[in-house]
Structure formats: structure tokens, C-alpha cells
Image 1 (cartoon, rainbow, N blue to C red):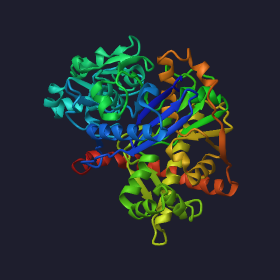
Image 2 (image 1 turned 120 degrees about the vertical axis):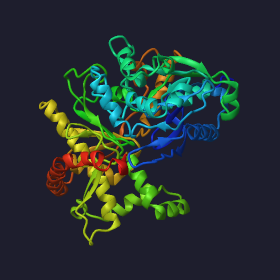
Image 3 (image 1 turned 45 degrees about the vertical axis):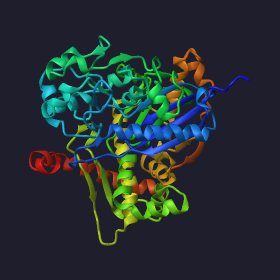
Image 4 (image 1 turned 90 degrees about the horizontal axis):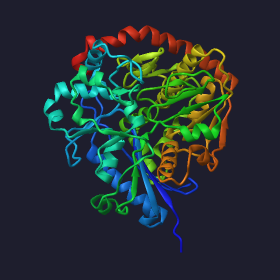
Length: 506
């Protein structure tokens, strides 16, 4: 009897690690999730433990296999994707030498400025800033030189997981391009950046196309995970790739909002914009969205965690229910959601920006605060939408497609619709990162010849739509004007947290 064929997609996000098994028609048949833990030794630092990543990976793989009720030899290919930018330094046995400085970590402000002053041309991701890999590696070189000296390679987060599976030390073209260390002209690591930073070339991983098979599951990894030894594994990619979703949805006239750890807004334009996302305008926010709500749950949501465990629902659903008790506008309470600086602050990167809860009164409740957090993210996404329209005044958008973990929140979708003034549509496919990964695995195995052929098999459709409420829109328009004035007023003051309060924050 012929066995069925399945793809395993592993997504190491900033807030959660997931393993999803897809059948040959790209239908998810099982999913297992584990929350990732972020350590903040200082308020602006953010680290994760790669050993914990691997422990969680083993756990979610085993659970996904068990839930799918399939044998390991039915998995014909594996891919890893995940958060970008964070360097993990490892030895020759892929043992981590230091916690990973994940992308929201802001300790390398000085190092980013040094690289900029070195005269480097702006790379793909724009001016050198502390969110990306180059500045983080330079911080490690200057502050932990013994670790850099002992390192065999630096790996990006999803590469660490794949290397633990296969023993290879490589990355993919897309993740390399997001490090600010990539030379687009020569399609290789930047000699210019290496010269300015003094980062040794020997620690840089090889670069491969995302769909290329770069290794096979080792005997050791097979024993740990329950996977079959020899199963092919592709290079993979970052978790922000939306290629099959964009092609399947025909985004002309529509907009995408990814409500993940760091929300992303992208709108299609017929204009050619840059080299990679050639027809999309928009931007990515910082540690707001999923990261913001996870922070609130962990610091102030003990009651929700306890009740959720007893009744078998998500604690985030309970937080949504509480926020729903409050009218639009959160009683005039405003939240600026710049918990780890901001990648889209008044049209530019501002690593000094901070979260601000403005307008607190004794009459405000915990529910007002929760709603203000959700509304603050929507206001910040509206600033990105304003920027899009400034760059292309003729752009036409009729509705928003939203996905990612935050998109499960009905109240958040309603708020987004009211704040931006467009219908917000929820798709039937929440896990777009792993879906994209499964399509890449099929390409790498030669099962499909191109993405067009794959898109014809995808069944992406709208399952829910939230339309703007005119009365709420009026409230939010007034609050948005105040939100922007606060941003403009506080911009200078935010920089004082570094110049005057460095010992406390940084």
C-alpha cells in the first residue's frame, strides 16, 4: 500500500515555537506549540536561550507527530523558519556559547552608529540600526570577545534548529539579506561590513536558496525527536515571508496586516519599490502586537492564566473579554506601544522610543488598560498606513487581510477596522509562515515546479469580516490626532533615556 506524504514545518517565532504537519495539498493536519521565554537582564535587552529552543522543538515535533497519527517515514521533507536578525554563536558541535540577542534587543545602539560612521552604504534593510545582526555581532565582539574567538559559526535562530537536526552550518538567502551584512550586488556576505566591524569571515555560514535541501536528519536528532534518520531538510527562511499568500490572494486593491509578535502592514502598489518586495509599501513595528500582549499576560495576567487552565481556553481570550467591556477609546486612555524602541516611528527607526500610558485617572480600570494596549497597536499601524499614502498618494485599498496569532482576537480586528477605516478580513489560514515553509519544502523536493503551481492548490478564503463602525471611527479619529501629537512631542524626550538614564535602561 502506498503511504501518504507529509511536510513538517517548524517555526521558531519570537513569542512561540510551532511544529505544523501538512499533507500533500497543504492542509494542516496537526499543530503543536510552545511559548518561548525571553530574558531581559536590562529593560532594553532581550535574550533567548538556544538550548531551550531545542528542548521545545523536540517537544513540539513529538506532539505534532502523535496528534497527526502518522509514522515518521511519511514525513518526506522538513523546513525551519523563524524570527530574523538574532545571532547565535555556536561551537563545532552546535553548542551555544551565549544566549541569542534576539531582534528587539537594543544594547548595540553605539555599535550601529559606529558602522554607519564607517561609511557603509545603506544595505537592503536601510540604515544600520541595533535591531539587525551586524550591530549585535559588533557588540558581542567588543563586549564578549572571548565568545567570538571561540565561535565556530554564528547562526540565525531558525538555522540553529536546522543545524541541530542536520549538522549543517548554513543560512538562506532571505535571512542573510535581513542581517545588514549582505552585499546585494554580489549576492554574498559584505566585505565592506566585515572590514568596518572586524567580524571574522570564518564565522559566517554559507548561503543557500530557501528551498534548497542542505542536509538530512542525523541519527542523533532522529533519536531525540522521533523523526526518521535521513529525512531531507531545506535551508528555510525568516518567518515574515508571505509569497504564496500574496499570490493566492491577489493583493492588488487590498492590504495585509500580520498581527504577530511584531505586526507588519503591507499594501500593494504598481510602482517598483526596491529590490526584494518590489510592489509593496509598508513597515514592521517593534515589540508590540503579540509580544506586547504576552508581556501583559506574564506580568499582570496571573488570574487569566489560572482560570484559562481550569476551563480550557486561551488566557488571551479572557483578556479580550475584559477589554470588550469597555467602550471604544478606552475612556480617553492612550498607549504608545514602543516597548522596545520603534522601527516605524514618524516614518523612521527610533530605538529610543518607549511605551507610554497617557491619561490615567482613578476612574480607569484594568479593562481600560487592556483595551488601550490593543488600540495603541492599531494607532501605530495607522501611522504606517499614513506613510504608505504619502509615498503613493494614488494607492487604492478596499480591505485588509489579517492573519497571525493576534488576528484570532475579534475585538482587535474590530479596533483595527475602526481605527484605519477599512473592513478587516480574517483568513481561514492562520499559520502563514509554516504554510509558506511547506510550499518551499515541496519545491526543494521537486514535487512542484514553481510557486504558481502550488498557489493553484491553496484554499485561502475569508471566514470573517469586521466592518468599520462610523461612531467608533469618529472617536478614534480624535484620539489618533492626540496620539500623533504625543509622538511628536515625546520624540526628543525619548532620546534622554539613553543620554541621561543610560545606567537604568541600557
